[in-house]
Length: 281
Image (cartoon, rainbow, N blue to C red; front, side, top):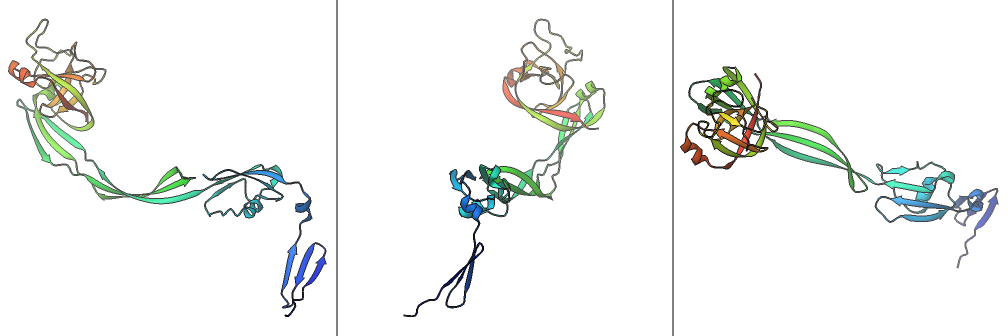
């Protein structure tokens, strides 16, 4: 059996090992690391269990190396890996992960009302609304498994939405002191609607709270919810104006003026969509 020849040479603080094959291994000794008192360090690594260790290391990066803690490129280490441990008792590692999310969004279309004065009420849809489509790409940044930020990287309109256009002829528009106007939908309320006949009942006459002549198209509202003189559109009732009030009309209740008792009785009480309109020209 051939014996291996190992020559040990201790030169200063270097240990040199020369084996029989001529391969030289050199080791460097840090006497300060051997002699210094161990430090108590707490390591908080993302969502993992907190580690409490003792170390004679001088720098943060040495502690990570000693404990086989792998660091990814985007991870955050506090304090800095080159920080001296003389003033450090806690090392925090925030695990950072980035994800790209692609999303296709269907966009709603606007509803436009073109209203003109006429003695008789008529309405017609002249252009059916079409929804649009948008492509978005988002960069999501997760810190220790929790979403920290969301950044829009790309936004493209694939299909433009087209507004629905409704042409209306109405006598009630003159209450706004205009002969015509274009309105857009601002918001929608779901409300409880009843109907009333203005020429019957104690203290009732043919004028509204604003002094307007009572006619179909005038709606009694609670001004705290819908301000008086607000233009409205109510499906199955039509273009109308908030022009009256009533003792029982509170919050999300409205009262629709109808010209005959029969229509009032037939209407009863029902839930309706109330479109709040805004004049655009």
